[in-house]
Length: 317
Image (tube, rainbow, N blue to C red; front, side, top):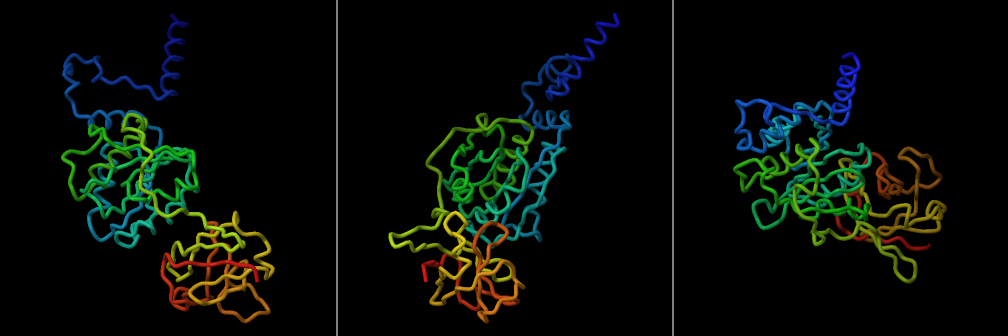
């Protein structure tokens, strides 16, 4: 008897370690023999409730924080998966600015652990024929509209897979034509965090929308042509040049950067670095791995009178 009890304990521990749970709704309670008719959201909620393993979901939107939108998304996630940990990356993306969202996401995703589910909703095409998608990249999940918002992630992660979200069992019903963040992306994220596989949510696609390539282009004479990817809160101009395209010669005066008619050939390691040169504009490697243009204690964007997307050239001196 003691041995059988020990075996049962071992099996129980094995089941717990593997995340298996048997609920009354699965045939063990005759009073609930009609459980098949229960909603998918109720079953997902029960599954998530019985599994205490933590799950991490991030949110990135252009919704701001003065309206109810972000709160509604969190409410849907937690109703399905009450054990989820929700991290706000930002809700201050400029309205409808897909490029800014793509840049922010590619700058931050590698700081999160494997298994993280990212919900990114900057969606001027909500309610139209644009598809809802899920990207699986770098052992993380990215849920949002098919409008290029995940382009830079996909550029960085060529082994990524993209799925068109089609299984409406995982959507909140009825699905609003103006709030897919709440009714589609939030419940899908909660399902993924609860263990649902991407293959259960839709079909693989390879014709998803892409923004211009993240990488700079090199011409025959060695000139690099890039662009301003982002202008941050301080007015620093973040380009798409990375250390893959540029060598240490850049920091020894062998190259110069041209933008909007201005020539920049001062390169620093940090903002307050003392140099013998008096140039107010300088370039440096930013924390996201891109070459940035700055003016100490001023807005480089205002000094240069530039905007996102403008071309930037780097050539030999």
